[in-house]
Length: 125
Image 1 (tube, one colour):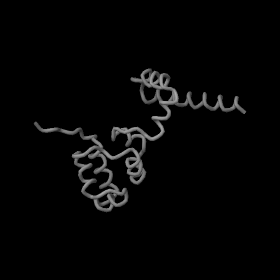
Image 2: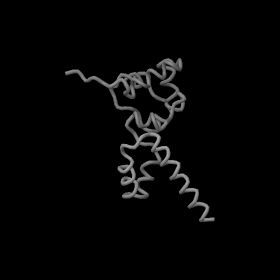
Image 3: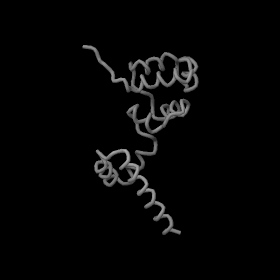
Image 4: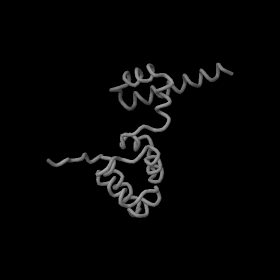
């Protein structure tokens, strides 16, 4: 049975973006500190996507959104585990509550959370 990968797989998107930016496989591998063989394996989906740190480097070099690429790779950015650990019940509850909201609703909620943070900081002064 053949394993068909979705077109939006990390490896596919990486190869597409790398080629669009004009980077050869060898040059880009050198830029991110891996072997060309490994990068080829990632692009072909023969190995798991790289670590979150390396994904961040890749996204930055390609001029892409780090959070989107980290999610596409199935990783978490460095700061998220600490954020979750700081409020181990509240953060997961919040994430479950926002599941299903539209991107616009999430942006509104983010703006409200940022406003709450500003209010809290101004009270501390």
